[in-house]
Image 1: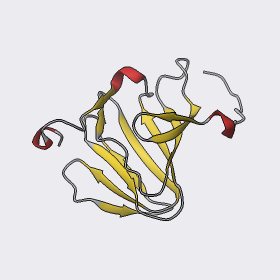
Image 2: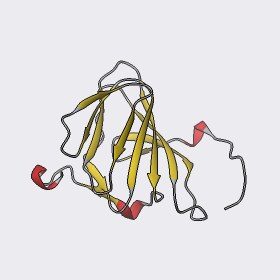
Image 3: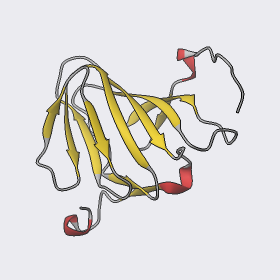
Length: 129
């Protein structure tokens, strides 16, 4: 890794089957310790229930209002400035319960790769915790 400044391209946003839009802000094999993405969930939408294998995640809420489900916690409302700590293998999903887009950062350690994502939407809820 070397010192650098990365300019972001908001037009690089893409839809993923998790039911949200993503911009990969920083995710490179040259820095395997962390990745940062911006997620956007439209009003009334909920992401799919999932977990990350071997990677912990932090959500930093930028704007909007959500209801977050993580692990064994009761669903909680999240608002701008809130940070959610999501351990590896912990079930998670977020719903946009507001009238504007819910936008948040997804900070993964080590970095996110497609092979660590596990969709558990249609599995036994007792196994999702």
